Amino acid sequence: MVHADASTFAQGVTKEEAYQQVLDQAEGLFFEQRNWVCNLSNAASLLWHAYKSLPFPSNQVNWAGFYTLDPLSLSPPQQQQQLILGPFQGKVACQTIAFGRGVCGAAAATQQTQLVGDVAAFPGHIACDGASRSEIVVPVVVEGKVVAIIDVDCAVVDGFDEVDRVWLERFAGVIAGACDWP
Amino acid sequence: MVHADASTFAQGVTKEEAYQQVLDQAEGLFFEQRNWVCNLSNAASLLWHAYKSLPFPSNQVNWAGFYTLDPLSLSPPQQQQQLILGPFQGKVACQTIAFGRGVCGAAAATQQTQLVGDVAAFPGHIACDGASRSEIVVPVVVEGKVVAIIDVDCAVVDGFDEVDRVWLERFAGVIAGACDWP
Image (cartoon, rainbow over all chains, first blue to last red):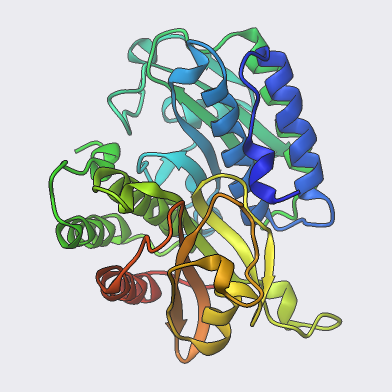
């Protein structure tokens, strides 16, 4: 199979079926490959193409990708943990986000998924793209520490629900165990 | 300005004007940010959205992104230099490519841009995506060594020309100097 076929999702499948395919394809792509940049790059592509195959509102996703723990933020003089942009699909994005700031920073600081139906109502929301109206952010945790977050934005309010939460948390678990983190 | 606006390209501009905007936006995004994953992720997004704003055949680009030198390939037991997938926009892609293999491997091994009008005619072409028909690969060279390649695929034959070569080589020069490489 050529690799691109992994991002081909049938029309008419349920969201659960699309996420199952994301996980199955990811596990195949991650087999004997633990480079985190490589694996997150393919993971972002899988997520993007899954959403584009689904009906409204999932097909309104306008950004899907990752931020990772910025290694430079762990040492002096910064001493404030921050996220740094990782592989993604969509428009250009903010480079760094302090732990605790906005939806991504909240997920990183609390190690809890943030499911935000209307980003305009979220305290301290960072508008990398004014077109984004809802967002889900899921932490990727290894040995009690956040190494990355999955970040997905949608151009309509209430773009995500508990199905997204459950499956993206499963995906975060697969990703956590599949990569050697810096 | 919100970051996403950097990927907004006006319709009706020339290819030269679109590439100029890519370089201008990239230099702004790279200012005081030398993390290579972050910068290549935004660079892939800039390229992708530039192509999508242009007329045929540039709007038929179906993959735009990077491979980098795989650090694991430099030490025993592998001892065969290889590229590993970096940030990109498009469908899932091959994870590793040996120096010398296919269009990407040829660019890495020779440190020369590969402008391939018909990939089916290129010896040893690696079909990550059977839909790709033409390709341009530009090496990113730092102190005489290839640290990465820019790889762009197009779904039609002869998708790229000398304008692409000139501007992507300029972009490779900007990228080479803007990042701390592993």
